[in-house]
Image (tube, rainbow, N blue to C red; front, top):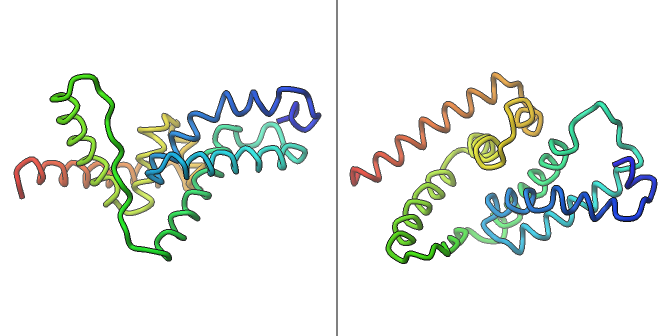
Length: 173
């Protein structure tokens, strides 16, 4: 951030290369759309560039701050989507080479995605940050603006609910 604030050549590109793909993947998981995720990622980088002169080292980690920005932008997009329509987000196709295995994996992924999508918003966000974005508990709690204990509670309730939902689907109930 210091290098961006100083206008050093390549600093913005470095930020985009280092953080861009992870942020894009995070946004795509939340939004279900690569195009929307690209827009959100670009907006997050733009906000980072604008914020660079005010960045205080020693505060939040840049990675945590960027995930917070992306999460908030995704929430805004989802809120606008809900206002415009009640249509469900489409599933993404799996590109595995073995068609039979790909179908099984795609079905399992669809069931998991549907179960995650059915979780309450805070539980869903906690699970995505910890299990899909590999943030540690402190970073995820910071992004969600909650204590580590509250994060652990969200994760436990979310995991329990996912397990129940997936077992129910497996047993045909």
